[in-house]
Amino acid sequence: MNRILYKGFILLFCLITVVSYGQFKKNTEKQVQMDYAAFQAKEDWTYLEMYFTIPRDALKRTSEGNLFRAEYTTAVYLYAGDSLAMEKSWKDVDSVQSMEDIKKGQSLTNQTSFFIKEGHYKVKAVITDLNDQSKQTVERTVDIRQFSRSELDISDLELALQVRPDTVQTRFYKNGYTVIPNPPALYGLEIPVLNYYCEIYLITTLKGKLKCKMH
Image 1 (cartoon, rainbow, N blue to C red):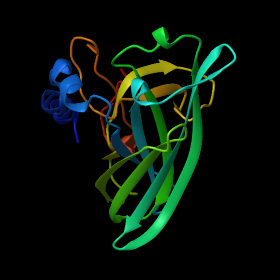
Image 2 (tube, one colour):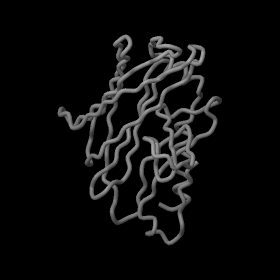
Image 3 (cartoon, one colour):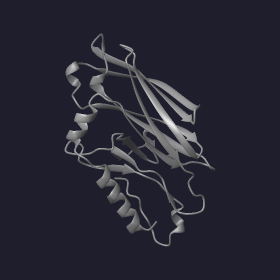
Image 4 (cartoon, helix red, strand yellow):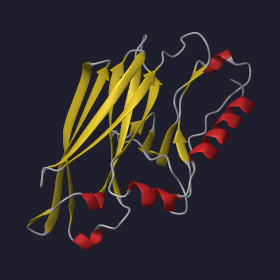
């Protein structure tokens, strides 16, 4: 893939994904959003990242001292056909000093990852509010390909809210950057800058120099 084709791909992708953020808020208020991106791993494995946003005002809160505390779990199930191939679950806590700190449109962002083989999968995520036991479930299919080991190849694009140089290795850390994902993949007046992250493999197979700009 040469520089012109790559830039054209990025432009086309941006035109397809950028829509009115006002419409986004209307259609996805208090709904969990999920997205994914796949990257090359060792041998014939693929590193799959799953991204989530949870509307902050959708969670119930209990008062504990000077804090208002929300607790919720995220369970992610990866199916190959009818069989459960992998699963992960974890608990998160979000605390504020005042309910006024929670503004409409705020979201909590999270992600998890799997090492998987090439194939067609179904992903189901269940978010459980531990304060009232309410649940939200979101599902989607994921097609995983095997990246080339001999020719130039490119990872999926991870659309992001923010990409910044960093040395702190949190769950959002990649190759010297903190990348905060944007699972709804929507931008507009309130999110005016389209940030993205991708990886290019075996770039040395090109005669020229191709750069994948991080933001």
